[in-house]
Amino acid sequence: RTETEIIARGAADMKGGLAGILEVVRVLEETGRDFPGELLITVYGLHEAPVGDGLGLRYMAEDGTVGDAAVVVESVQGLHDKAIVQGKGQSVWNLTIRREGEVCHELNRTPAMDGLLETVAAALKRLRNYADELTALGARGTLLGPPSLFIGQVHYGDFYNRAPAEARMQGTRRWHPDDSFEGVKERFAAVIGEIPKAPGIDIDIDWNFVGEAYEVAAEEPVVRHLQAAYEKVTGQPMEIAGIKAVADGARLVPWGKVPTVLCAFDNRCAHADREVVVVENLVEPCRVTLLTLLNYLEESAE
Image (cartoon, rainbow, N blue to C red; front, side, top):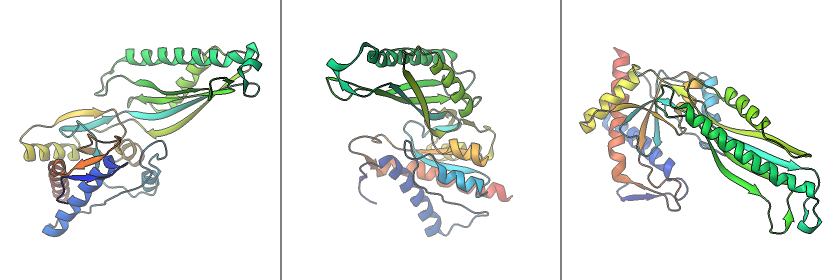
């Protein structure tokens, strides 16, 4: 495309990566560049929470359709000059807090019905304290900063003079490679169990898993070739780093046991009301991706 901007309302963060993949494939085809080995291009839907959880990649991994290494082309801002070797795991937690009885007019409610609001307030306080406890753990030798808990939504009631029968809360939990989703769920349940509940109140926990924490050795060939490619293209060194957001490394490494690196593309407008991809910003990461692939395949054949 020669336009300065590719407008892709609602999906610019994916369009940048897809455009990059297509450009790499076009160059390989049009230049007739021959190389040893095989290159598998994988594009799948339901990529991102809350609807997607990477099951497309899980099925491929369980079927044995994996390579010796993987390069994830992802639109992630601020990581174009980083070689990602660690990633946080992430899941969305959901709490539903219910009381006995039905929704009613505020003037018809009994004193016991206000126990729902009291429990919601207690839950917020305990979760906020838990978030502080996780922050206090620190990075613990990782490149990822501390583990975290974030409260993103709290819904109590639906009208100004109705006493609700349930409330909902939702947020994220992110963890280190030395932890696991199962461990995270177990400790979260224990924290919720500490919340003082008014009589007749129940709290249910549900999860939307997004990706597992992972780590790749900095000495892996694909990591070295990414760093070398970036330095060749830009003249600048590429430092080792971690990623707090979930990209497909959080699926390919735990599920497929594949050494994985990330080639980051521009996403400054991702998740905005008007999402765009700036074509000029795709050129450099395409060159880095292409050189990484060619050098890795050539070395692997030696």
